[in-house]
Length: 139
Image (cartoon, rainbow, N blue to C red; front, side):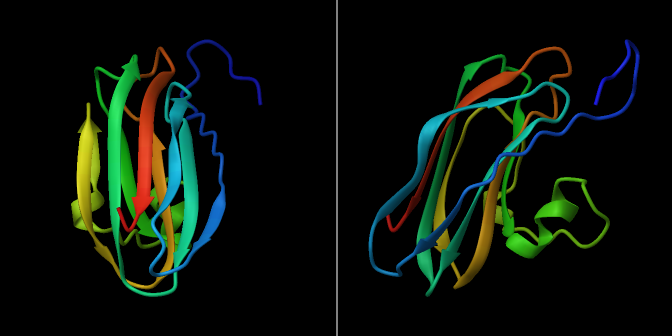
């Protein structure tokens, strides 16, 4: 899609990976820098927990993240509604809701199920934001 200067259409880019996670094994799901496109760019990872397990998220800014980014863990079936790609309910885990955050660190147990973690550049319309994301199950 090509946008002309002054266009108000949001540009959302999503990258998705999926993992099945055993309940007892410690596993790094993500430990890398993510570039989030300007104007709402999204990166995400999906994972499945077979039993309740602690999940840890750490996000640190690298470049152009001074205005903050949005990070969340949501049920996989709510991902499209939460990222604005579809209408519907967006149920999230309050402890993992970060809006306009410059950095983030939180650990708590998540119940068994299919989950999506995402980061979105919701605050910077001029530049891509780069953040380092570390997502661990059973830290």
